[in-house]
Image (cartoon, rainbow, N blue to C red):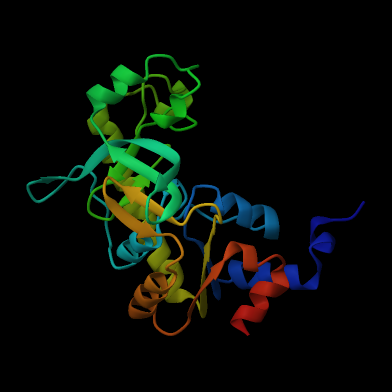
Length: 250
């Protein structure tokens, strides 16, 4: 039987060693949750959770979090820090074409619309684990898998569906992940941000605001500002083997 070490080859072993030693920071940076999973499947890498793992993060939101050291969904000064949303996949905009839209709403409206967990349109109102889509109004990303609706499994929610608890917990976890990312990237010799470039979507909308999903330059600009000239941004579709990543940093 072939071992995992043998099956990934010499370039795979080199990639793993660079990540394990901290020399390479390989950051899944949006746009959707499963970027981290796709990286893991492609390169057999396992990493601690980072800020962009659970939700919808357009490049502008990634750039905003790169320049931040905390997330506070509860409030910013006297302003509300978050809003729950409805999700519209394959939203057609007259000018910009096909994208994904989030419309801010209220807990009362979502609860009224999400009456049946088996309804065919339930994922318009709740994510796949029955969490509310929760928009960070400051950084303009939409969080999933944190802010639990009563339909969610008790293993996910910890037995609590209290919104304040959910939001406080999510803010704490995300702040820890942001700081973990900063520590990882400051320590690394090379930093690579991998973006899931979903070809069918050109933009993400939050209410009337449109965020270009292909504007990787805003991420590179923020990353360079924060971490220096050791950063690269790459589309996930462009890295199909460990050697592709090694070539990028060589």
